[in-house]
Image 1 (tube, rainbow, N blue to C red):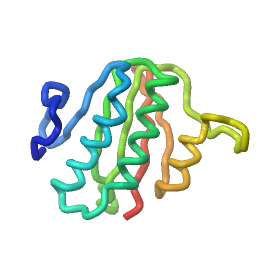
Image 2 (image 1 turned 135 degrees about the horizontal axis):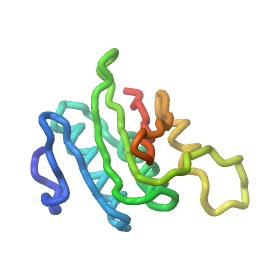
Image 3 (image 1 turned 45 degrees about the vertical axis):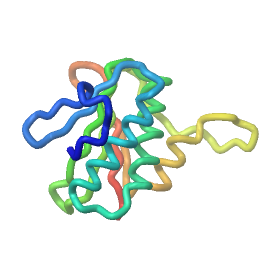
Image 4 (image 1 turned 90 degrees about the horizontal axis):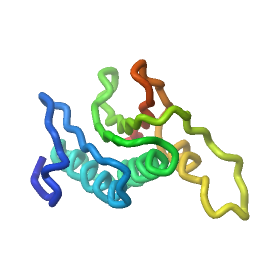
Length: 138
């Protein structure tokens, strides 16, 4: 990491896998955007804007509907090298895309993720909780 994130104590490195771990904190989406932006920059990707939007939506969803801790990872797909954003939380429910509504004031996050990501999904974890992931289209 290039060291721009002020809350360095929140970043843990395990081998070459970088993790950003948060509890239920309203600053988590902003920190996740910085984390993803730096991950992209450090690996020579020119534009992280779409990935930052995706991670913001996934982390917000985990904050609102999941359970802490929230863990954000960015890994490369072994098949094509594209970045995959993973957001893990301990909550039992699985995210689902809400029907479109012109009058709703929320509920559009996963619609946005589905539109911006090459593909996305949710995988339940054996220990409980889930990982919601999105592969970035470059």
